[in-house]
Length: 427
Ligand SMILES: Cc1cc2nc3c(=O)[nH]c(=O)nc-3n(C[C@H](O)[C@H](O)[C@H](O)COP(=O)(O)OP(=O)(O)OC[C@H]3O[C@@H](n4cnc5c(N)ncnc54)[C@H](O)[C@@H]3O)c2cc1C
Image 1 (cartoon, helix red, strand yellow):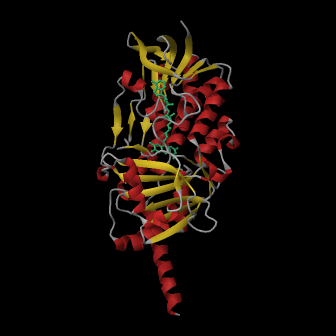
Image 2 (image 1 turned 60 degrees about the vertical axis):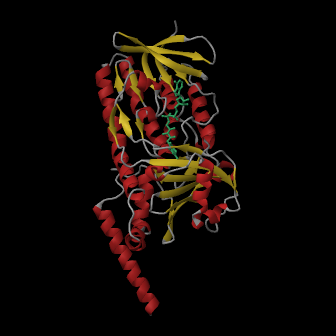
Image 3 (image 1 turned 90 degrees about the vertical axis):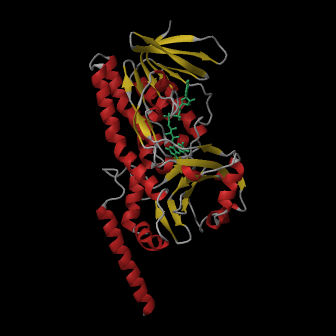
């Protein structure tokens, strides 16, 4: 029977990055995925990749040129609030980059899969579906699964890692309970890729988010090949597609002239993907012989585009702890205690902010007067705009987007700008 130091179930951002890191140390790793690469992830995902995630990819030795496409570089982030106001936020520099990318997940995930394969101690098997875990004396000791229609195989390992996404089989098999969940502010997403989308303005090179501030955002991201990824991000309790996602998606876009203006001469070139009531939470991270990482451990709404970053961050933390455990330098419980602490320290403040954004931006309905004044003052304030980009790119030391000081400063400056504008007009 074959045996490895570590078997990793799932080979996209979390699994492939962990395999590469352990492979670099010479650990014997089996990286499994039921998918064949290149392919899209089975859980739908939009394509935004920010400078913070690119910095971790740099550390791993995954060059920008391998996953980036110049046509999908985003240098600005335009925000349009109903018909009230709009603003164009520059992608302020963070971690040495002043841009983000729209990525093709087929290409991106394949780059990571291939990168893991460059380490001789990493064995990869695609189209291998894990169906169960080997459990002995209260300890996970391997996986059971099959390649395609092949016979069931039992593969032993000292550690089994569940990097198998938000509907993790590994988590189910070990009954990893959800230890924190926000079930109150849920969103549903539908999206598709389009061609020939009209620019928002002359020289437009960016992302664009239109918001009704009434439970609907429409984020648009540039994609390789001149395409645009157009999303509906909707408060989940308001979605009723009546069995027809296609009509719902198109009718919703058509009903907002600010968005449709960009799309009426364009053509949808992909199927419509969707995910309903996107959960937000954490599962128990580990137990005897098993550990979760990536979305299997911590899943959340995509409004802040942090999923890939969090997966890369979590595996960066997990790698040295697994290595020390395998060397006998660290007891399993201590290694896993440190892992959980590192995951919380690295992700929880952002998670809280994402929940606040969902509440504020999808679930509250500010009066028009507030949108025209306070919201405008805030979103057009240069200091806030910079903070917003640094928040998204994980460049803020505390991951906190909004503080009373930030709000107060933006409002005072906004009032000042309005007064001087009125004064100039009067003169
Ligand atoms: C609508 C939406 C939009 C998003 N947009 C963004 C964004 O713009 N930017 C961003 O950074 N993040 C985004 N995310 C989040 C991002 O997609 C995830 O955080 C990221 O893919 C997590 O990576 P992962 O490796 O943990 O899991 P996944 O990418 O889900 O990969 C899990 C892998 O496990 C494999 N697997 C599962 N079960 C088994 C099994 N039994 N046997 C073998 N293999 C198995 C699957 O085939 C899959 O390949 C978005 C998410 C959603 C839902």
